[in-house]
Length: 424
Image (cartoon, rainbow, N blue to C red; front, side):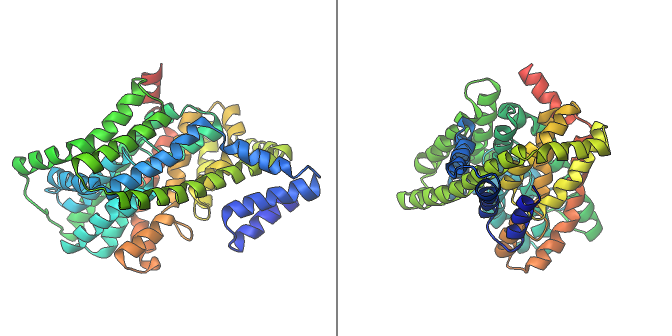
């Protein structure tokens, strides 16, 4: 057990890719310590990705890429400006509302930061906002993407924990809206403190025109959430529906998507999907090794020895996840840690749907923390400021996010009310 963990952490610390560290540590154990045939490694990795819900992964990634390229993000942004740009600190509110709308389409924080973030940061700087505030609110609002359905991390969690992905999706709606509300409260406070005014006057005519232009884009979350809640299609089929709708908008309605762009988008989707699935496969193998070596049992026993109070256990796990999120990519962390934490979660009667939302939100905060926070690197490049300035810009916006995390940890009804209502 000890050599396995040492091998994993040493390879991770020296900068080896996460899937190599996971697979290498597992191969080290199966080949040299347990003397298992090497084909067991391939069998377990293949079994880890042989799951129908995982088919949704490439389609959600493709949908996000299509929407960023097809001009859908521009229409969402224009509608958000017309809807809330008249508030004090208007473009800060626009940033949040735009992310909430886009969250119902892409399912990833990276797609939000890379797509809407490019538009939002430029607009805020052109209107006189300082770069730190623009980067901070853009980074924080991008974390709403994987909380409000659809959500790529929740698909991975559902597969690893054997939990209904549909219920996970619905459970994220209220926390996602709470995150948006908390960030808008922070923007309002910031605007009053720094004397930031309104960016435009409210006009019904402008709101109406922008709404009409954005209706096809706004229908995307309606189609996805409505289809899943009514049972018209599964979450996996919803991902395919999102791609079809994005293609219809980009090719036929907006006519902003050509064959060359589609080829580039397809290649990017293949590359991203391959990286996600190879991590899932390697993490599945690593999780199986942890189970066979009884490490998960020992960790479960250690957690339950500390406390048998469900709330206290969740708070301890929150701290662990916030630390791990600083160093590990989201998909890898979910794939590795779900088998470790789920036995303790089940023994104390904590609802796995609530735990799924708590875990995903923890790891979304991890995207905003150094040294591995992917969103930080993306926005640093978009805003053309240093990584260090980006980190300092994001820190104040962790306050509303951590506040919502504590709320959904302490009050399960915030995550479980809608799933109970829709799936009873």
